[in-house]
Amino acid sequence: AAKKAAAAAMAPATTQDGKRIEVAANANHPEQAAAAVKAGAEGVGLMRTEFLYLERDSAPSEDEQYQTYRGMLDALQGKPLIIRTLDIGGDKQVPYLNLPHEENPFLGVRGVRLLLRRPDLLEPQLRAIYRAASHGPLSIMFPMITSLDEVKALRAVCERIRQTLAAPEVPLGIMVEVPAAVAMADQLAEHVDFFSIGTNDLTQYVLAIDRQHPELAREADALHPAVLRMIRQTVEGASRHNRWVGVCGGIAGDPLGAAILAGLGVQELSMSQRDIANVKAMLRRCSSGHLARLAADALRCPDVGAVRALAARLDSVLE
Ligand code: PEP
Ligand code: MG
Image (cartoon, rainbow, N blue to C red; front, side):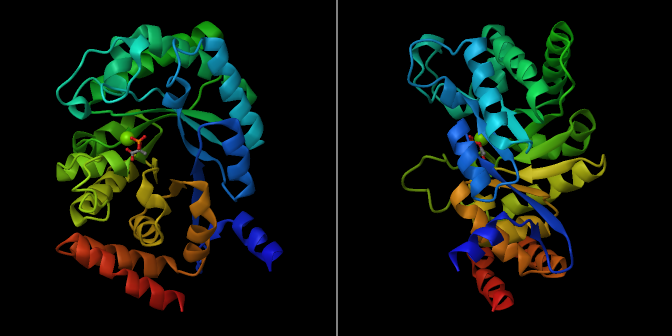
């Protein structure tokens, strides 16, 4: 039985009618990537590189980063890797970066806002990524994108560095986690290769609830219909330019969340490795018709309680 379960975890998530949903893992270290592959991950959909920068006295060198990115690719044995550039802001303690104190760090110089002000951080990271790019399939993803100007500025830096290193071209994508990026998704899609929706931050910014707020944590649910409508808008914007959309926030690993996201047309779900087998098994037992109807009903719900109550419907499909 254990052998059968392991084989099922390795098989792809294909619905009853043959629609395939990519299931990837969020992993930050080569050992995590190797474990994720064993758990059935089809790639790493989110490598949070800030972990390379925390709890130390100076930024990781270009060479150290290169070794880590190569280590990830080696662990993945040909499966794709999405490296997210440094996403840090005033809410994290990184003394050597000398970040000024901010009253509202989640609304401050965070993610690409910091990188575009700090070529000393952006350029070594991009150089390390482009050097690693000849060792396996990787993509670059930028966090906290708010405007097309940021995308254009970042693409220009990437292209300059790529040419200097004579490195291969790699897909460039963005996190969609700021409501402005959702509103402009159809235009942003023209200038990037893919979107990955960061539902943790998108929920925080749509509902105006601090994602770390102890008292409001339960209300900050990514299945809130307001968030789901934004996900639909993002998928629609992307499809106008034939771009794929993934989700790498926590809701991707929630069975009901994964079903609704797949029904909304999300093509890749990147999650904690422990959720992979469960989500794959659930998707395999659904048809794309079930998933689309579930998503359509979720979009019409008046509140998050009503969306969560749809779990009963998912259970009956699975019986
Ligand atoms: C997100 O915001 O949903 C996300 C995946 O990124 P992080 O949790 O690292 O902000
Ligand atoms: Mg985020």
